[in-house]
Image 1 (tube, each protein chain N blue to C red):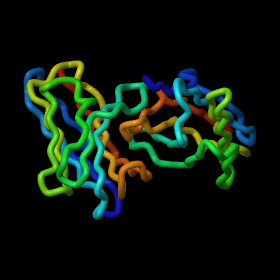
Image 2 (image 1 turned 30 degrees about the vertical axis):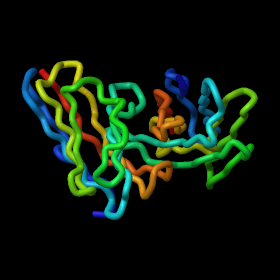
Image 3 (image 1 turned 135 degrees about the vertical axis):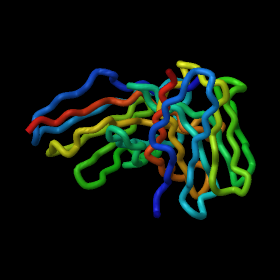
Image 4 (image 1 turned 90 degrees about the horizontal axis):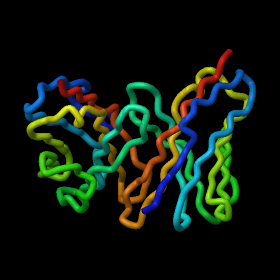
Length: 113
Length: 111
């Protein structure tokens, strides 16, 4: 497809479970971003890749959060030992270059019980 | 740290009226501000970008202004329609190139 896709769209996890969220960016987009969006709030930056290099991970809330983009295209955000406060929508965005228009995927809604 | 603030209170207006949404920022003026639209269950969609040396920008029924003295951007939708109902987000880049979003303002246009 032409847009950014994310899977799964919805994920319910038991507290303590590990989860993996996938992002397929627009083909040819160098920059890839992950955001976390709590209910009623704007997206908050988590991490940023340029090709396969993770250049900024300052927004990751704890060392339970890990992201990778090994071949410079698809990216995975992994959350280990999920906690209830991890419940949110996780958005992925890509852009041709940094500080160009970002195109967002539909998000993965994570609910931790 | 840089902050973006938007009215958290929902805006309810009648179809055909002009909707005006406010975005205030702190600290230094960004080189430009961006406005996004977000519908329930979807990711934000880019609408408009305005640079600090532009007082006003228009796109169809949308108009954005940028006042560096007031540290404020206004987003207007003229002749509003029920289909304009959504959450509108303002965003700026910080010095590290990250997008910083406001909390968004929910707009509801009643027929």
